[in-house]
Length: 569
Image (tube, rainbow, N blue to C red; front, top):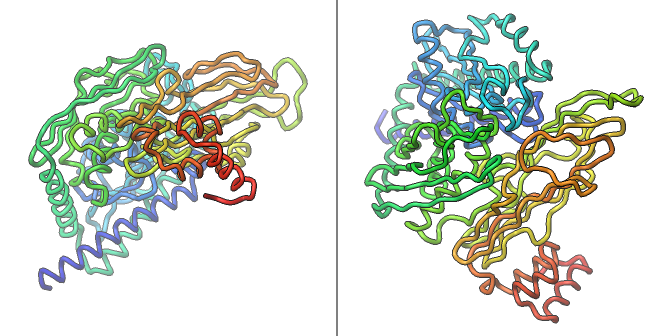
C-alpha cells in the first residue's frame, strides 16, 4: 500500500473511531438511569491506545468529563498493574483526583482485547444523582463527608461482576437501584464500543491499533502546534471574581504563548474554600484546555496529542488545585468559570476573538423531598432525590449575540420540565426566558431564565442551591454591559442563599431568576433592526429599547405591531 493510500485509510479509520465512541456515548444516554445522563448528557466516552492515551472522544458529553478522563486511564493502568489486566475485566472509580473531579462522577474503564492481545481501552463517565454522604452540594467540610469513595478497583473480574462491591454501594446511597443501573449502563456502553472496534480491526485487517494510534497522535499534535506557532509569542494576565460560598473567590490566570505550547498558570488565585466548591487541578486543566482549543484550534479532534501543547499549572491548595481531603462536590462551579478567566487574558493577546463573560457555571439545584411528618399525606407521597440542570445565558460573541439559556462551557442540556416532574413529587410552576437579563451591547448577551419550583401536596423538601453570579454578574467585553445577576427567594419573600442546603416548608415555592450573559461592544453600536427584533420577541422591554438602545417611538411601535401580528422583524 502506498503512503498516500495508507494516509487515506488512516483518515477513514480515525473518522470511524470517532463514530465508535459517539455510538458508545449514545448507548449510555439510552440506558442510563440518572436523569443527569439521559436528559442533560452529563457524560463522556472515549477510546484509548494500550498506553492509555486518548485517541478519540464522543461529541456527546462535557469538556470537563472528557478532558479530565483523558488523564484517568493512565491511573487505572498504574493502579491495576499492566500484568494484571485481563480479558473480561471492568474497572471503576469515583476518585476525584484520579477520575474527573468529584465523587458524583463514576468512571468505568474496560480493556479491549483482540485474539488474546490487549489493543486498547474504552472509558466512560457519568454523573450520578446520589453517592451518599451529605448529598450533592457544597455543605461538606471535607471530601469524607461528601459520599462513598470507590478507589480504582474491579467492577468485574474476568467477566464476573463484583457482587460484594454492589452490596456495599447499595448500603450507602439513597437511590441504590438508580446507581447500580447506571453502573451497568456504563459497562454496557464500553462493551458496545469494544465490539465496534473489533469490527473495524477486522474490516481493515489490522493486528492492533499501533499504526492508527501513531497517525492520530502525530497529526493532531502537529496541527495544534502549527496553530500555536502562528500566534504572537507573548504573555498576558487576567482575573475574575465570583461569589464563592461565604466569601468571594478570585481566579487569576497568566497565559504565555510559546513557539510550540501555551502555558496557563493560575498563580495568585484564591486559596481553598472551607466548603465544597474547591476544584482539583485535573478539572481546572480540562476547562482551561477546552477554552484554548475553542479559540485557537476548534476543528482539530480532541485527543491526548491535541491537548498536550496546552500546559496548565497552579500552586497546590489553591481554589483550582485542591488536594485531598478538600471538599470538592461542587468543583464544577469554579471549573466552569475557568474559561472566562482564560479569555480575560487571551482577549489582550487576540482581540475580537473570544466572547464576553456568560453565566458560567450551571444553574443546578437538587431537591430532597419527603412526606410531611406532621400530617396525613397522600397515598402516593414518597421520598425522592431530584437533580435538575439548568442554564443562564451565554456571553455575547464578537459577531453574534449570546445564546439564551445555554450552558457554556459545560455544554450540557437543560432538563425538560416533564422529566423533572416525573423523577419525583416536584412541580415546576414556571420556566421561561428572563427579559432584559442579557447584557446590552453591540451584540447582546444571552438571556437567563425564570423558574418557580415547589413540591406536590403533602411534601416538604430541602433545596440544595448550587448558584453563582448573585453578587458578581457576568462582565461585558469591549464596552458591553453586564448580564443580570442571579436572584433566589421563597415566594413569601424570605431570601435564600446562592449555595447550600435550605429547608422549604410544604406549600412554599422557590423563585429563581437565573443570570444573563454579558454584552459585547457598546450598546450604542447595536443595529436598530436587531433591537426591534429583540423587542418583538420579548427579549427586551420597551423601557430598555428606549433608554438603553435609543429606539424612537415609531421604531418601538413597529416592533410591537410585528409581535401582535405574529411576525418577526
